[in-house]
Length: 355
Image (cartoon, rainbow, N blue to C red; front, side, top):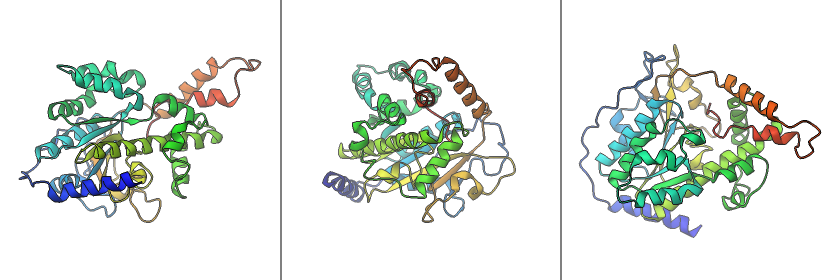
């Protein structure tokens, strides 16, 4: 714990002693490409997650500049969310900030591949899709994330994996207890109620009620392992000399109450931004699920940045087909090498949709 205290002291000292930069008016954000409910008056605007008051763009960016940890919570399949992430990074860089980047989409055992790419004479961001098995591991188009890597490469910003090794996530979701669970302190630092119950409810809903109740707790622990791993990457980045850290992740992991900030060292300043899809007729920013307060009056996100929705297939239909395919592939009941629960747990998608 002493090393974590030193992180807080080092970063605080940096913010007190770093030179100030003249900050010009922000550039216009990129045009939004989503078209569903794009005429909702919330679209393109930013609101305080606690009060619902509108927050001007320059104020939101200034809050990000003053934060040691900036969490940008995306809906994975919405290209506007990725464009705004790249925009936010560009604005921080333009003001003189140099954040390290932590990606949920990079597994812990891919760090060596990332270092090898970085050490190349002329690293090419186009190589990362194959090198990191990006799309083959179920993540959306790498082209949406590539501008972030391009900026990091140009500015020589550190990049850190934010996900546990895939085998560990899989083992935890099967109900096993690999060493990483102990190392991350998950058992010694459980989520308090009602946050723990809310996480289970969220996972139940995001899987359309198709996951057996007995499997929800292991999946929740795997979710928490991801959060704790990203927090661990933040500490590594700050200890290594980064002045601040930007986390690129799904919106559930960016929550202030039970996401990554729950596992951060006390005293680190953080700003959590959720990119939120607007819906027709819903013009109250605090009526959206992302604003639902679970405990202690703490809003799940500091800022809500609204975008249009995108057209997508009903995720429940996709999950139903997935489970049906798994059931058809399950060995006959007389195969004693399989248990009843194993096929169900094996069928959990690697990257289930965030609610």
